[in-house]
Image (tube, rainbow, N blue to C red):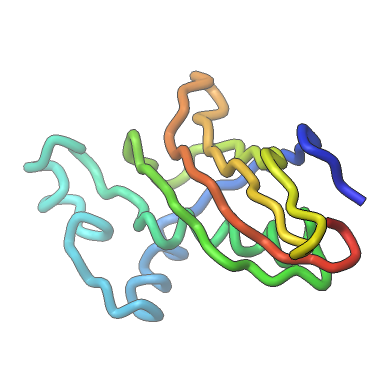
Length: 134
């Protein structure tokens, strides 16, 4: 059983090929994500990773690692504070912030940090249900 304050961390990164694959899967071909010439003319100066692709890390962890097997991912609210770029290492951190033992649900803080600089890139909260862990 998890308790408030329990946490979990993983490192991740995406390469441009994975971002291009996500363009195909999602249908989001915004040139900001794959066209270096287009992106160079924006405030970002280079292609940025889709927010939904970043959130897929949350989905993987919630369903497979923390809380893991048997979990139902109920909701996610994310604020993308800074752009994420390909080939950089990021750290995702998950912290249980509240538990409802009657409904077997928990709110879990979901954050992404730039591994090298320690800056908060994404801040959010997820809700998950798991009868064995909450």
